[in-house]
Amino acid sequence: MAQTVSEIPWRTSFDAALDEARKTGMLVFLDFFNPG
Amino acid sequence: MGTVTYPQAEVREILEHATIPIQFDNTVDAAQPIIKRYHHIWTPDLRILTGDGDELYRWNGYLPPAEFAPQLLTGLAHARLRLRAFDEAIALYEEALRRFPTSLYAPEAQYFLAVANYRKSGEASDLLKGWHRLEWRYPLTEWTVKQDFH
Image 1 (cartoon, chains in turn blue, orange):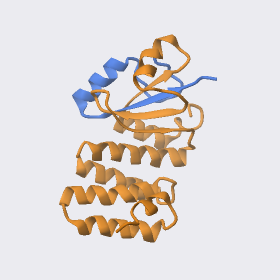
Image 2: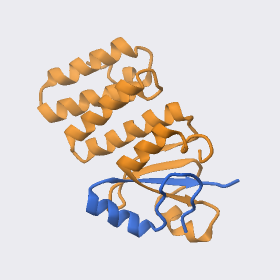
Image 3: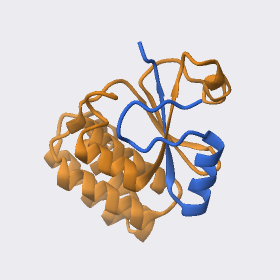
């Protein structure tokens, strides 16, 4: 579902990203983009 | 953003070390539930969320690396402030101001650095001292107007 467009280690699952944030106390950075 | 801003080292460093980054192509059907959940309408659309999915900060629009990095630091600081993690918020605002003192986002960082110090200490002098610094360093900005009632 998520796309990779640079060297940033973008996560590929939203639910897994939230779960990782809950476990680590970090914040989620969410980027909506348009490839055009 | 993907070809100019994200590859830049200081942007990548902040994203990697301070966030769990995820992105969605808004033309893909599978992204529609997330688009609806966050009422997405225009790209670039950047959000800072808690692990529960609550949005704490947002902005729209392309930024070059030299402005994106301080916007990101200021947004992360604001998210920590809203979570009442005052020491973390103060450290992030101070980092934004130290590394990017002339950025478009420095006045916002200075405004809320004063708020964070005040919320932490309860001392009105911390708020006024920070806002006086805002008036002195960034006299002609939105954030200076917003504190001009005292």
